[in-house]
Amino acid sequence: QVQLVESGGGLVQAGGSLRLSCAASGSIFSMQAMGWYRQAPGKQRELVVHITSGASTNYADSVKGRFTISRDNAKNTVYLQMNSLKPEDTAVYYCNAVQFGLAYWGQGTQVTVSS
Image 1 (cartoon, one colour):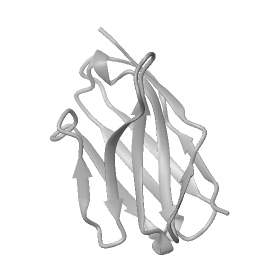
Image 2: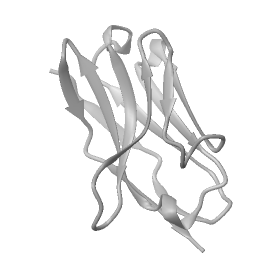
Image 3: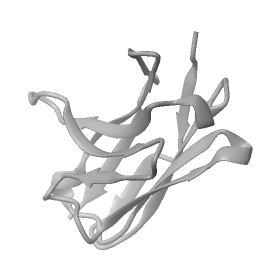
């Protein structure tokens, strides 16, 4: 069983930055993939970015050039650096991990970008 705990959300003005963290209960080195999803009110959950065990990344077009995912295997933590934030980035951000074909989710952290 993998447990994921997100942190780092909050309220920021448009153009600002935030860094989200996702701490995993086990070694992220064994994860097939980890990533971030988001869900805005009234919308479906969507992929923001994921990173595979081979360090390949896949970003949503809407965040390319602004968001960066990184991982620290020693700390079992994945980060999402978000720059040049826009009001449309407002959502609950969820950390996701895939291990042995099973998907795990964190509880989510709210990101609100004011205009």
